[in-house]
Amino acid sequence: MTEKINKYAKEFAPLIVLSIVIVLMHLNMHESDILDAKRYFATVLDQYSMRAFLSIRYHTWSSRIVIEAVLAILARHLVLWGILDSLVMILLFFSMKKILGLKNNEPCTWILVGTIFMYYMGDMSSAGWVASLMNYMWPLAFGAFVMGTAVDGIRGEKVSPIRITLSFPALIYAANMEQMSALLLAFYILAIAYEFIVKNKRPHILLWIGFIIVICELIFIVTCPGNAVRATEEISMGDMTTYGMYSFIDKLLAGLDHALKTFVNTNVLLIAFSFVCALIFIVCFNSPVFAVLAVVPIPFVLAKGSKILSPLYKLISNGDLRTGIHNFNRPGAYIVPFMWVMFILCIEVVIIKLSTSNLEAFILSMVMLGGFASKVIIGFSPSLTSSGSRTQIYLQFAFAFLTVYFAKKYEDKLKGNPAVINVLYTGVGLLAVMGVANSLGKIATWT
Image (tube, rainbow, N blue to C red):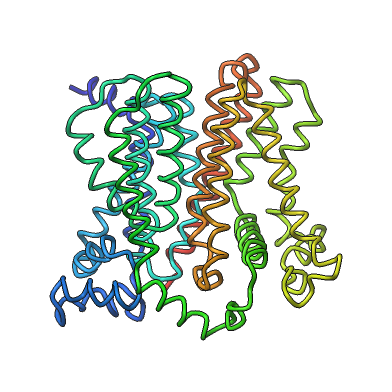
């Protein structure tokens, strides 16, 4: 009996460690009385029926009625929410593990756990834990579950009927969130094109059904009157009163600027991506030049807290340098946008160099660019500044995926040098500990 327990404990050690940390985080989360979950959602069903509540939200504020229906129920039962939220985060781990083709206790599964730890949970505190996690983390986890199910089918693996059945409510929930809906649309287009062009076969009917569901959700989002009302209200307050004067280019550049500034702000995941890729270039390619290219993002991440790099931080954080209607004719106004484009191009070159086929490079580039696009499109909404850094969760996990993917791809070559593989595991481990410390520090002090 003891041997069996030890065997299972060893095999599922990454899951056990992940679960312990997730539970520890939730035990320390305190929902503020003045934020949405307790102040509004926990009591709204005392005043209205579910149908009336959703009708009000649809016509006056938001198209996320699927998410908010579940939120209005769980906000009344915070212990139950804590249990379900923990399970959703574990589901995200399992889904990413499935997509990456990892086994239970292989080293790269530990790296996956590490990248999840590196995600800064403090980003989810701005609107309260309950509302933020259900609006951002849950769509990500359910979307990953749907993608993982589809990917297994495309690979020709057997997918259980229960998993297929569960993927539909997961898809409906995930696609109710605008960013995730756009990402799912891109996923289904790529999956269907892959079946047609690469595998030279008709895409499975379930891919078409998923594609149609996402299209319907997007139409629902675009035509929702509440979204228009909310946009008007957000333009009239705060620092977005001039938003109505923004051109398409203004919105695009504002989205790019906001996306990159929030992304590089003490981003442990970006450091991990650069670290892993640089190590691969040094050991597997003997290419210091590409290794330097891989670590280009690190100075941007360190700029805020570094006296040496403080001029760089002042440059990227200076609102006067944002390109807009007030300075479009000044050459200096394009320094920061140009710098951000070069930043993304450096990452793209790294991805292409580490890929062994054009198809692989294309798919991984879509993962990276899709992550950036999910944040940049916020520039086309007046909630650009009010949404804060929580909207970058999809970009963060795109880099978590790429980090683990490349670590797994080159793991055997790295293992040829025991010292290097130890550096890899130690480096990722230290960054994971830093990520957990950052998150727990914010959770413990947030009120």
